[in-house]
Length: 444
Image (tube, rainbow, N blue to C red; front, top):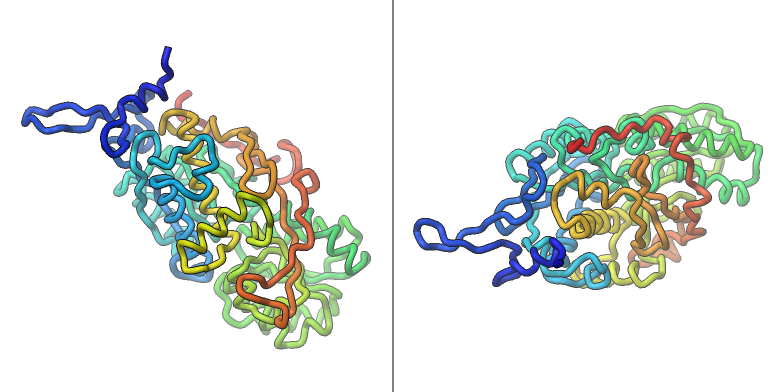
């Protein structure tokens, strides 16, 4: 007996649209939804010959640079889903001829790097644009706010950049999935490598962004490095969007700490690190920026020299999939080298699409079940999307900044180690996952 997938493909007409044609009362051809086997939920079923994704990114605010690179990757993913190319050509689940017989389109929202704005924008994408899936992030506060909307509206949220432990910890939801590692995993990857270089029994002082990500980042760095024998002197919160960090940095310098952690990201991270170097703190203490990326490193310039951190992904990682993504991104965007945030956005879009194809439906509970426990590779080796908390179990790249004389286009740091998932993982009933309760699928 032919499968439902085969029958769907058999109904594809001109242009590859998976719709059964029929004549209306005026004798013209109309579209009939073929993917309506399951009960209506969220924005399912998808009617017409187009399925729409929602990309909700910061186009203004402290993380707007990251949002811009996410958006470039989202548009590239949609192009590849419709026309082939990139990873679509090597993913068995994807055809390059749309998704489940429909052309893929998208709508864009602006989170403004603000949680309330992000939630409002997500609701508009669902209520007005009828999107079947939302992706985006950059600030964990905006990601968590969108997850809450996703769970309420029963529309999947494929997290792009969100590093807070809470995203797949106490604020986890059934309708949210995270690819990037969290703050706890950064700490577990960094601490042994940095301790091996700097030594143990060091004192440290932390500045951190005062919201969900920075708070869990601070706690994760403290735990991981104290386990290595270090001792924390103090930790001080700083507001998101701070322009001048000098007063905070003076307090860190006056503490006499051996090491100063700058738990800031995006433009904030570039500003705090640049301020620290201009004040000469790098001559009095070691500086660590636990999470950064290529645009942030580029903005910081020579200040990044010798600075340890972790990144989501980098074009220096050699593999067929990594190289393919870099090459197709550069071809599309005038030789621009993609950042880790772009890699996350591209991967999450195609992960959703592949799961829908495996499920043979856009019905959210069935797509969710295809994602849970799924094993895959997006250029850094074998990964698993863990079912218990929807946290990807994946490697963590640890990097160290290059001196300005050795920096070149798109290369601002060297990869010290690609730390395996086994070294940074934790059980489903411990660590950040201990507080996770995913909630309902919606079809129980």
